[in-house]
Image (cartoon, rainbow, N blue to C red; front, side):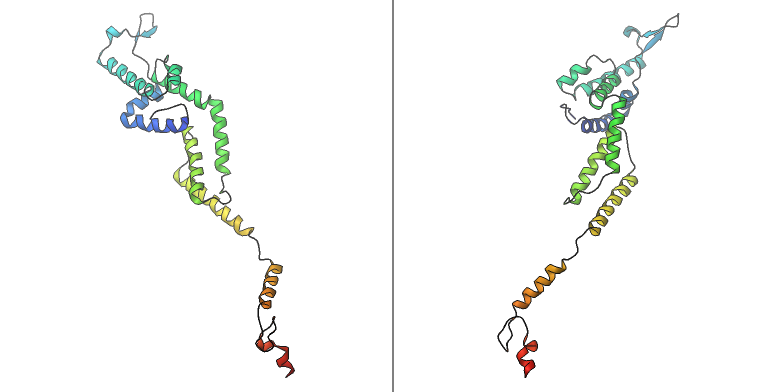
Length: 215
């Protein structure tokens, strides 16, 4: 998946699945960020291990790190490449993109709080069909998941069902009652259209004709 600088949460979700499908070890490396091979000196200082002393295990570790960096770099635009090109570890690259587009932890928590509010207060809009309603609801869920806030399927289903039933109940409660005046007016209009076959006058049937009653 290529990131053009727009809709980061969508790209992040797709990229996560893509990397995991290639090699879950790569994803662990990006999330946990293992250190480069190191060596401990006699004075107990730990320094990066010289490349000419790498063993096979060290080279495998470095190879996986390079592969993870390569995947991220090939999936971003030039501006973001310049932003993360100085990072040594794939985790640093991933974290820098997160901070750039999701903000710091405080900003992230604020976004989660707003989205949770949208989730809790979600309701069906007037004249909105079910498909559009579910689309809006799914967008909220996806944005929350991109920020590592998740709900179980049973929770989401129960929530959307409850909101939908509440909307239908409110529609039924406030549905207007028939206007009696308009109804009566309509009835009188219908009577005006009736012609008596006895006297040929409008407004009544032959059985109610005053002429017959006089007889």
